[in-house]
Amino acid sequence: PAAEVEAIENSLRANLREAVHQLADRQREIVTCRYLLDYSTEETAVALGISEGAVKSSLSAALNKLQTLMAGTV
Image (cartoon, rainbow, N blue to C red; front, side, top):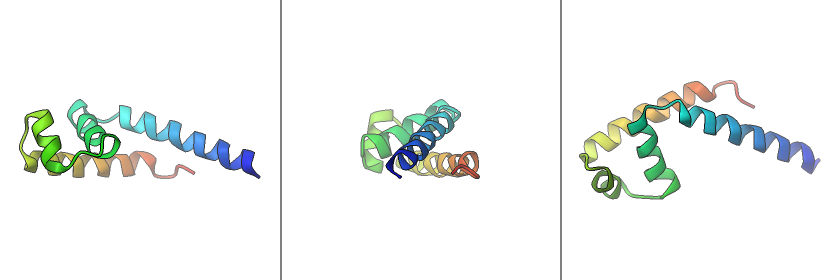
């Protein structure tokens, strides 16, 4: 039923928010720029005053950590 699906979705969102809060500040900023603000790699680099390479490597590390933190969720 719809209520169960909504409860699961709410739980997943809460777990994801908690996982994002566990990221290092820079990683959280990069994830926010790339996925919430929909910035390109270049736009993220300019906004944060770092190189595009730093954006890419930090984003990769952040996504790996999020994957680990979210493992078993659902």
